[in-house]
Length: 350
Image 1: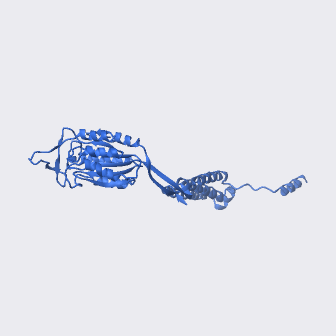
Image 2: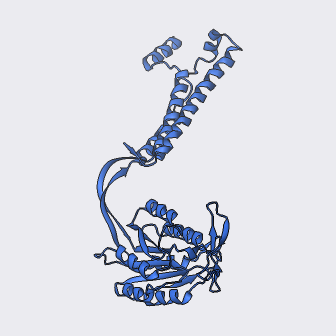
């Protein structure tokens, strides 16, 4: 026998506790009666009381409750093989991990907001196949397309501004790296979510977006930061600000959100552009667009499926409760048999 919810079987401990309570109550009842009369007199006064019938009623009640607990645990047997298919969309999320993502114009920082939102995106897109790409001056596929959410979450936690050793922001390389993550034989919808501040350093993002559009990949872009720009803090190992990033002339570098590039990428690849300075629900429109995309078969496998049999134990519990109500606590009164009653009437007539 197999149980769909075996943790409910712990309630059998409560059934055992109820049995102990009923037994203790019957013992206490007998003890109280013995204080008022001797056992011989009790046998005369309560001659029709049956301890055996009381024990039978309690046993039936306990068996009924035990059957209900087993039914709640979901007993199953009679397994059969069924084919299970999962349909969804292939989604690759490309996250900017450059030093400019440390700017704090989006609190607590662009990088932390991006990591938080990607984690929420993974949860909201359950059932789809997800991959992750991190990029700075170069791009790297952190996680290939997978249905395993735990693996995706693990790679999201590793994303930081220090994971890509090459400085800069190469959005074009990120798009091309994401394109390599899609299986060539896939005929379903392919979606890319690009999260960045938009600053690109000579990687031809517009040309990469055209390549994606030619391969049928839709790119949704998400902008982080402010167009006015924000200085990029430098922090020590404890997270304390020890200065700001400076250019070759010693002037502080201000990282600005390049909305124009991100909007152009989304337009070319048939996606949408969203921007949020606070990071609150900035991926809502993107999630809605992905959910409305055409689904394709991502996985097909044979799984063992058990037949539910909880109905049997519910029916048994009902029958046991009915039987418990039908059993009385007193013995049936003794009656004379028919020949004996006839003989007694004859004697009276004489």
